[in-house]
Image 1 (cartoon, helix red, strand yellow):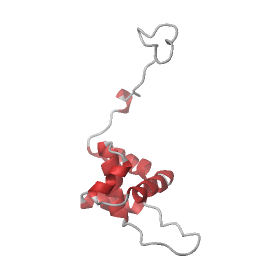
Image 2 (cartoon, helix red, strand yellow):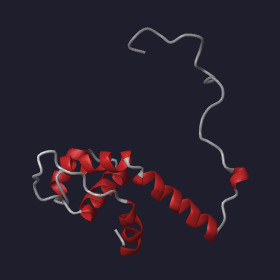
Image 3 (cartoon, rainbow, N blue to C red):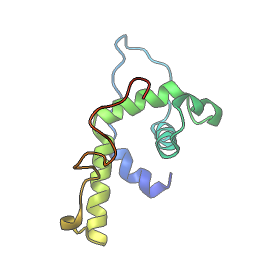
Image 4 (tube, rainbow, N blue to C red):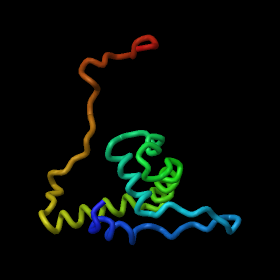
Length: 117
């Protein structure tokens, strides 16, 4: 991950939650965890495949992913990216649309077939 990306992403991360017993194992550095998360999201690989990369343990990456997703880190980073792009190039919002279907599939028929279909 380039330094300029990390410099914008790091301030969005919430502080480390307190351990209920007051003790803890050494935590994987936030940057390593983010690199592992982005690798999974970018490639579509399984979380367990992170073991082979050596970046960090899959359970650490997945736990941090859930923690940061609940804190809105990825949504805010996406929003900041849209704002930056809008300032640089401009986004013509009147031409934006959602990807979806508004009608039935043309060959879908009235009912589904017997299982397995």
